[in-house]
Length: 318
Image (cartoon, rainbow, N blue to C red; front, top):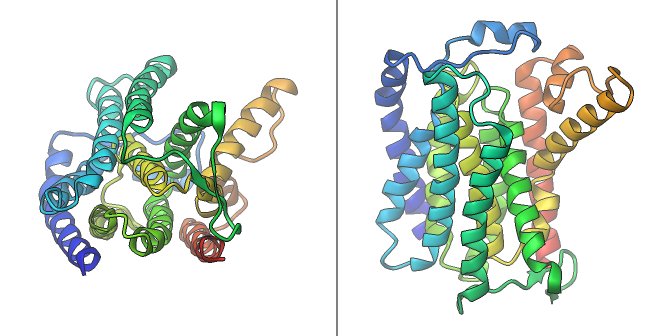
């Protein structure tokens, strides 16, 4: 019941904010600059308002406020999501408002992400309510501890998931739909374990569904790093609160594939002095340059994520 109410409220707030925020962003000339070396079909997207992650983040916060008093466990998820969203917002602001194409320097962005993750790690290590044992997929309910690797693993999972979501954001509605599939899976253990996280999950699902009205092809607004970093943080933090970070490898495999495609492309390019594995990375652009329509790539990635979510549910139940 709480999940359903949160989804409805989140959707209503997000859908209602779209017609207000999109013209505002356009008026401020906060438009996306499309890479010249990208797919030619994307050039027509130049100038599309970005930083649209503000829309679903605002909806997430507003909706969650109705449930914080009765479900205090959602606070860490909210704080991590907002913190990474703020990092993305500053990055977007530098790029599109201050006209510095690269935004944050890589080391600056990493330091900000490390600081936020460190605060969360300290919370998880010191909180009596938080547990760092992890459920093993397909194990029949067996939990294990990573021992001395617990904290390094936490950093790896959170930063990897955040950047995976960031790389997945490259086609109209792609990151939004993939994340919705992942969140659909997370709802199952959240409800069955009586975790108290169902309100924030519902709020995020509703907010993303409302945002998808404007982010689906042809997109009227892009989420920018404001949205993609926040989404990745939401997924990783929720998984940790449910003691299910190992399941991210299964249900968020699209995130992983996007990151690996970039790592492989850059590494191979340097090793071979200019040769490439993919026509373009992240991998969704490779499929586009192979002649597959953008909308088909998005739907294929979404379908794969739904299938992986089903496998994740099976891995949780047996």
